[in-house]
Length: 140
Image (cartoon, rainbow, N blue to C red; front, side):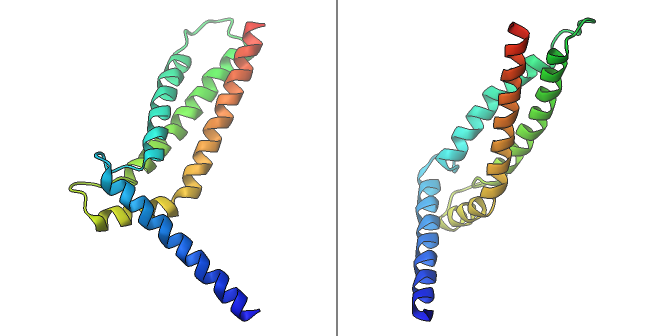
């Protein structure tokens, strides 16, 4: 059993190390020093922020429905979380001249922040779902 546990640990370490090396190589190769996935998330967040701004700046109508108010509130909360995610993603890119060591450090930070990034992405998905639900209610 001990040998099997040791073997599993070695395999996990090799897998983790390969993930860091592979990610660091990707960061080093790319012109902007950002993982492709993080760059894609930044693009989506940019689009989301434009939509959220339009929704939160909605005209203040005196007879605003509960669904319209909910959309405005959700849009404001969504903006806060999207800004937090953008700040986190800014920390996960190579600053200055790219070197192999900076790329490894950036990939390691990315792996250590993965849970936080995933949690923010999940919350943003929930906001999107709630906003869509309230839009359907308004359009009825």
